[in-house]
Every structure is written in structure tokens, then in C-alpha cells.
Image (cartoon, rainbow, N blue to C red; front, side):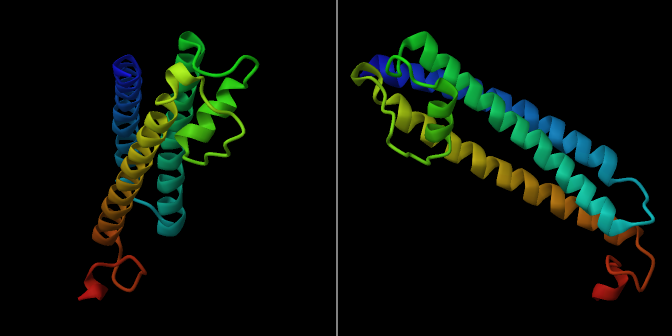
Length: 154
């Protein structure tokens, strides 16, 4: 059991490092794009949010691939299992139950789910921060009377 916990911890740490790099990239993209002057603030805000989500979704996809590779290296899934599907089901906590890990690695599924929940929560926090910072910037540069104007919010 200790080997399962150690392996799950190490795989989770790799995913956390990937997510940290993605967070830095997403915030960098959001700042580079979000802090420009714009004629169309609604489109601008949408573009910043979409770019941020794309970066974060790419990180989640890469993290699922890391789990799938770990399952392959450890022999954690039954023979003939589609490992990417198995990793996605665990990471997203969907838990269909149609594929279960081999007995020797049964703790990896819940550890992947725990890792996925943490990463989704982290992504939500990043999205909220980017949204708030972009709205603050748009309010600061908006002319009075515009929907983003800080002066009109009192």
C-alpha cells in the first residue's frame, strides 16, 4: 500500500508542476492581452477569458496523459484497457466503474481523482483572478458612461 501512495504522490507532484507552469503561462497571457487599451471591452474580456481557459484545459489534458503513462508504466490497469479513457474517468471523478485498476494499484484511481479535484479548483481560482484583474483594468481605462466604467459604479 505504501508503494501505491508513494507512486500516486509522485504522479500528483508532476501534475502540480505542470499546473503551476500553466498558471504562470495563463496569467502571463492574460496580463499581456488583458492590460491593453481596447475599443471593444466585451470582446476583449471574452478573448482574455477564452485564452486563459485554453491554457488551463491544455494543462488538464497533459495531466491526464501523465496519469495514463503512469498507469502504463506501473501496469495499473487491466490488460487491453484504453489508458487515456481510464485516466480521464479517474481524473475527472466521473467514475463510470466499467474499468477498475488491478488490485495491486487500486489506490491510484482515488489518488488521480483527488489530484483532478485539486487541479480543477486551482483552475477555477485562476479564472476568477484573471476575470477580476481584467475587469479592474477595463474599469480603469473605460470612459465615463461605458459598461465597464469605474466612475459610474460609485
